[in-house]
Amino acid sequence: MIFGTDPTWLAELRKRPDSRIAMISIHASSVVSIKQELRDAGVTESVVFPDLDGLGRELKQKWNARR
Image 1 (cartoon, rainbow, N blue to C red):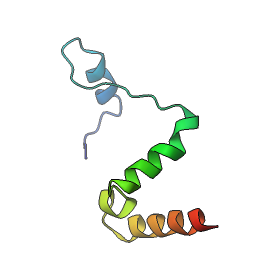
Image 2: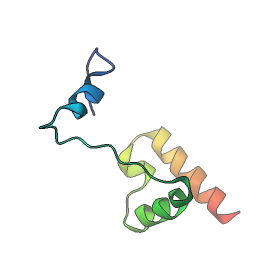
Image 3: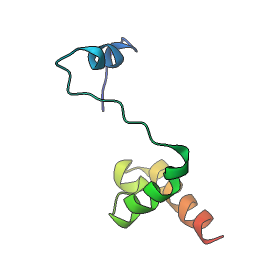
């Protein structure tokens, strides 16, 4: 998690030549397969967001995948 009051500081930090922050672009056609690969690796909504909202989103994804 990243906290702060300046909403652009992370984007500005990324522009610095010595920055270790990089933008990763994922093509829309790859999203479904990447989500499946993450689930297979055990990275799910309830792991990333361990609260009721994360659990609810994970259950919704599983329910939609079975339809």
